[in-house]
Image (cartoon, rainbow, N blue to C red; front, side, top):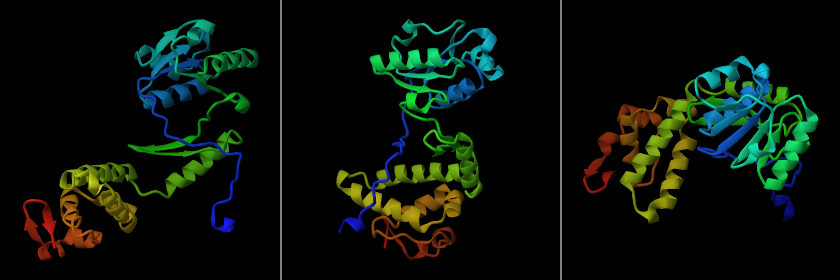
Length: 251
């Protein structure tokens, strides 16, 4: 019986989409690596503070400061910088100071990432492909950042153009479905029907889907069927439907 279940591999990380909107993130360092870290957390709508002597700032970090996208302090790290902080990212060429920061974070139970020192990291930054709401991260668990980038590019190259738009449209379809079938007890059916749409329609078809297609498609929810994209787009099936104003289209 045990062979029917996945084997435990171990040595991995729990990859999550960490919501840090309005969380206070401290970045210690201002070089190229710090610039990448800053962009990552700004994209997640965090409130970012950068600590670094001005002489060590990367042009991109200077740009973030000048645009007011981060709070900046022109000096070296001080322990008091950890007051009222939710996350710490260090990217400095000073292993001793990095280790001190790491230990202070452990004492205060603050999640931290010490660049290029995997043992001193609560989490890793992977190589991320971003297309609108779609984010795909490849992680090597700190073993090979460059390889992660190569794998990520290969994955992205095989995705349909504008796949992010498909994700947005699926989100819109889900919202429309909730209006068509708002009752709590409809939850399992809604989830199952949406899953079938995503499985039976190709990614390219989801990219091409427009709002009129969505409205036609929703007519098949009550009978719990999923027509093909061609049937919805051509309207062949719609001609066989009657309209029930209390719910929507039904067969």
